[in-house]
Length: 73
Image 1 (cartoon, one colour):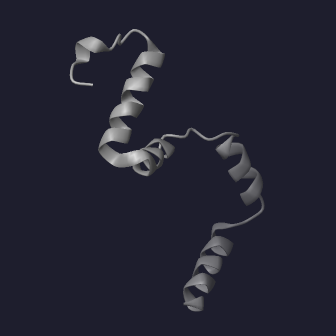
Image 2 (tube, helix red, strand yellow):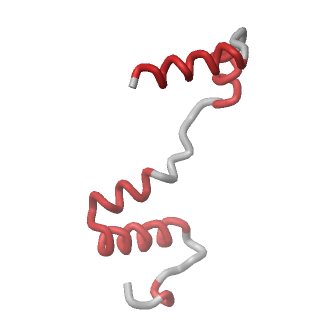
């Protein structure tokens, strides 16, 4: 795509298609895929999951676990 005038920037589908086209041209298909994957918003509620996972664990226990992982090296 040589000119911005060729893209209707009010049309999200046209912008997305033009962007993917440029990414594929410049990075190749695999590179474009890896680039786009960086912007995946994910799913779920990280904060709620973290709170559930870490409930009942003290910061001392976390530090102890980190020291144990360092000793494994």
